[in-house]
Image (cartoon, rainbow, N blue to C red; front, side, top):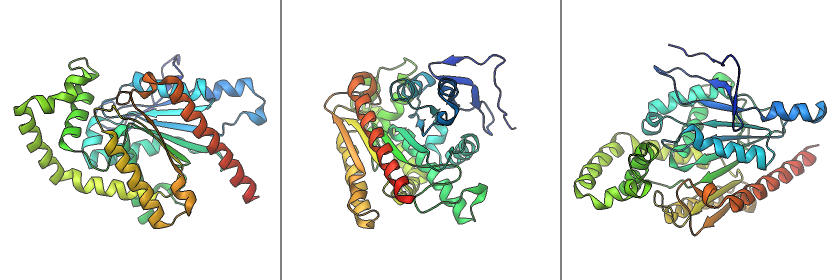
Amino acid sequence: RRWAPTPPASPSRHHGIAHAAVLWRRHPRPPPRLLASTAASRSSEARPAEEAEATVTVITLGWFGSQERHVRKYANLWEDRLGVSRTFTFRPSIPAVFFPKLGQREARAFMDAVPQPRGHGELVVWHVLSQGGFTFFGTLLLLLESQRRVGGGGGAEVDEVGNTKQLRFSALVMDSGPCLELTPRDASAGTMSGLFSGLGILTEDQATQLYATSGAFKWGWTGLWSLYKSLWYNNWREEILWAFWRLGPVPQLYLYSAEDKIISCENIEAFIAKQREMLAREGRGGGEAVSAVSTRRWETGRHVNLLRDHPAEYEAALATFLDDLKKKGKRNEERDR
């Protein structure tokens, strides 16, 4: 069964997100939604026609078990505080984060739904939240690579800087992750928190402490996680990591906390160190490649709650990153003339 776009009779905005832009994919039931901002249309009314086209688009990928109200606040920040005129948010479904085949199907639907970049100079920033968002992002990269291997299926020709006709990767913002490999404890904390904290069944502390405080749960979860790793996780994880490393020296900002109880800061910093090592080893972009990776660490702050716990500093980190990205893009345009 194919689901078609179904705009309501009278589109209504909720915190910068237009429900008229809901796009569906192939799925036996209504899927998590790709929601588009209406900021571009608002800004075009206020500015001259020659200035109406936006130069930046931000795509936010939610974490495992995230809800619309969770990811919406990031779109609000980019639009209302940072002046970005086009944003999209997407919440990968729970099965798509757990199982490669379902993740691939959801990635194909995402690529069909997301609009094309507007012009050669448009910057597309990906705001990726936690390990679930990173898993879906990596699945998108794998899908693009598979299309290229079969001759650019779907018009996904990839150029030397990782841009495609469907997706462009100008910069990445990583919030509360990722890590190189989930430990059984991290996987338990993330799964229980994603499944039950948002529903009010467990508090975040209860969800994260379950593995340590319940011997029966720890025994059962360890067995299940070992089975899952052997069947799916190990190979999928390796493929995603290598696809990410092949993306090359794209500007990256990592936002994380020493207090994170889902993915420890040590595991996030190990990922960052590995990313810098891979860029240096490949020699892609010279010293600029390694310097493309920047970080902002807080000593306090909950998992995927850094915007709420440190709003002013979070906004400042994004503003600086975006300003540097625009300056670099302008220099590249002048060099190419």
